Length: 331
Image (cartoon, rainbow, N blue to C red):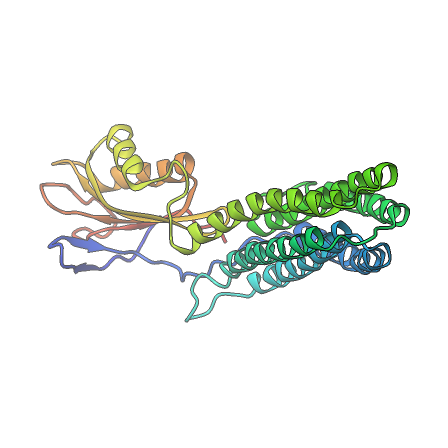
């Protein structure tokens, strides 16, 4: 595309240029389907949470109370995810040139931390039950847990229809899976207590389910922190990109100063410097580089600076100008 380049120097001693024929308005793509799924799931989970809490209190089941507490964190997480989707649609401004898309990652981080909190609470209550076993009404526990399992199965099916790659949709799915495991554990515990009268099975299964939740929470936490710490996506590290471009794009002598990061789930950005070979036409080098970054590495917004060492030629519409490219934008 035609640009109005300008050049400047940095501390590396290279001349670069950065052409901008647009502002950095990047409104994240948040589908109405995702918003609807999150909102409906929130209403279902929040409503049944009260049923399970009352059932756990009446039956004396730690497994049900733990699952009700987990449902509370689910409702909070789903509410945060919905708010994140709404805020993520706010338009970019001069101070936030990429909009508010990263708020979704922050909400994902909160989701993970709430999971850690509920796991700690389950462990604490389980220790108390081992020390002082409490009577459990197995019949009431079984009925409430069975309904809870059906509710969670429906919500899980509903959330995983269509697009489920968003970090917050994934977070919500992990929460609901934890709830589902909690309901299954409560059903198993109710059956065991009904036939054997051995109440310690209730806190034992609660601890087992909490360990599964902990594993999911750790995975979600790592993903959110990796994005917030500007980590490169899998298979799109700086060395992989440099080596690939030097081999795949004719006219590229070297690639340096590669920085790759995710703005939010599925939105990858990169900056890099390309040194063309002597006599190479810059225009015929940069366009293929843009193409490879977008198609091979999924980078929607590459910013490419030109290292003018050597005898590379610039054959743009405005002779004598340095060039750089901003690519991958869709408005």
